[in-house]
Image 1 (cartoon, rainbow, N blue to C red):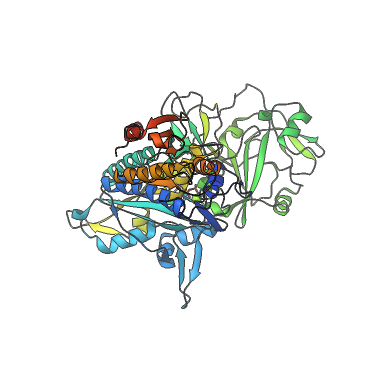
Image 2 (tube, rainbow, N blue to C red):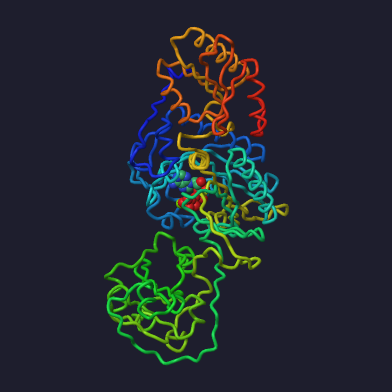
Length: 574
Ligand code: ATP
Ligand code: MG
């Protein structure tokens, strides 16, 4: 491709709307443009990368024996009503009606649709196992679309679904997808960790998430260096224990604590550490109010709360001031487990149930209660674990100190079991002619999110550093002066030659200043850069690999040797 003809609108300024490097660079490198919040178009350079990521995904999915199909984005409400997710999916689902008032959605995912397809097509155990996938556009009305392609409202997902006769078959399919994902993200040049995930709305038992390590990641993962334990913080069991001291239970005592509301202020006021307090968090779940009591020095894990209550995530919200006043009889900041309105569902983290003489809110403005003890002074449902893990907590598997890191969830794999075949009544006939439910798995990869994650991990202050595997072009040739005949001639010749070697080449033949050309080259991050300049008449060019920094002067007949070496180093052949 010739830069002079290429639709590549690069930007010098950092767009103010973009908070993170990948979003800024995607815009600046002329790869994407925003239509409205969370909705983007791909310009030629962006589309090339997107297609390269898709190609890797396709090759590995095909190699793993999955077969590609393409389903519609529009799905009728009925199949979602049957599975129960028409309601559970909540406001994230884009819903619409046709001219006959029939309800539809724009598919946020396709479990129902694939199950429905297969149940009508596949009748015999002889046709199992089956694994099918698509690379297709998904729609989700995200609460907070942000970070460009990372969390958008229209995005491209590779979603695969496996159908097996039994659990054993599912385990095998799951492992095949695990291995395929491992290869995909490795080929994409990502540093990633595989962690246990929350099955949440998907149902089913086992699930894993593939996390690209990044400080801007929206997910946190807890992992152990001493063993192989790794899980998202939503899932990780919190092994926090309290020192059970041999102390007798004292009588409760009301203490005047004017305007002392937060744990931070309370620790100062009482001159005690945060672990001597229990905090009570009030939530609304539709028309019910839930109070969760946890140790004062810890955070609540809302996913564990939602899972315990068995309600969809979108139903849980922190209670507003009015509700808090109603159920506690006090201003915000004084809630506690003693004397809450009767219909409040009171959940007590198991650690609080073991704490002695704890300080809690008094459910009276400007008051707290000292020496509260579970069972004697307050009752409620004790829940084993409502806490968010924290760096240093004991690993649930081996007891060593856990570490916490941030990650971008680029893909996940779920063992669905019979959740969807049960609800949608999807069966096959086994060897004995008996009806059995399909045992299913589902497997997603965010194609555009993967693209963002690659940029997030591979950039510097000048621009993107693409790995050859997904780079929009392998080589960029910059002609320093388009007025110098020998430079133009050599540039053109190399452009032709390298293309015939099977390389994707971008030729900067624009009539621009060298500085502008170099800035653009660094911004768009083509891995191999050849500069044709003052030594063109000697057949000598400058050669540099983006991100490696060492510029060398080489004769043109050495170019291919260097290019091949770079391909090899990145694990590729040409
Ligand atoms: P998240 O927790 O980030 O919202 P999810 O659990 O909702 O992700 P899935 O429903 O499992 O994600 O979707 C499969 C994959 O699709 C994810 O691993 C992610 O890579 C991608 N994905 C999900 N939501 C978005 C989005 N809004 N924008 C871009 N990619 C997304
Ligand atoms: Mg989501």
